[in-house]
Length: 299
Image 1: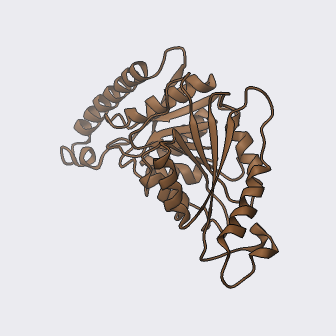
Image 2: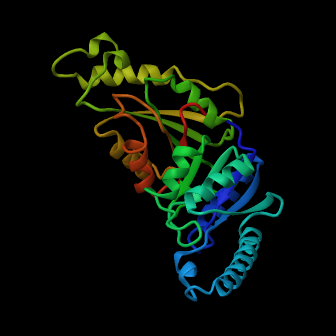
């Protein structure tokens, strides 16, 4: 999973600058180029302005559009390294979701970066609306943040990778490690939800009325420890098996270790509480203080 083209979404609000900074830090680590994208939508208030005198509305709309284009250029120059800035992308759309779709189709990014709060333009860049729509529909990884940033390039990076043992954890580990270095660390976090124990995950010894936590832990750890990375430039691996509610344990682990980034997939199965938007992944993105990278299962 090599990120060469990054789309950083903004709604021109001060908070959305957080997403541009996130993209800039990621670009420095990956050697990628950044496109800063904005979707311009005509507000309902503007549509009602001046009553039926459409000429006045059109004149004001043209002025607002020019101001937005100018502000987009300023934000891009101020928040993205000139060596990393590819271009800015300005599109017009009926609504914010359509605008995001247009920006993604136009720029064809490898990853989308955005803040989880915003205002007008890409109105309500909140999970449950625009950001959630981007995660569901982009078809590429989406990295979001509420406040914290990735460490500057050259500083150690600690990635907490939430793994579901229904899929070989080596696949996602290798994908994430592609843009990490020897001073970085990947912590594979697997949570056993005691309310439901799947033999297909932990072996035939997992079938009993009162699950033995030690047996389950050993079985899960054995699978995690089978993961390895080749090369002297690869990040180190740490294995973390926990018991409890997956979504809360993942958040607690990230907070306790002060993780630089949390990585989750948008699909999973039982044993990891169906790691899908609407459950674990959505909960983590909504509540994590750390940046979160959401990867489509087929990415």
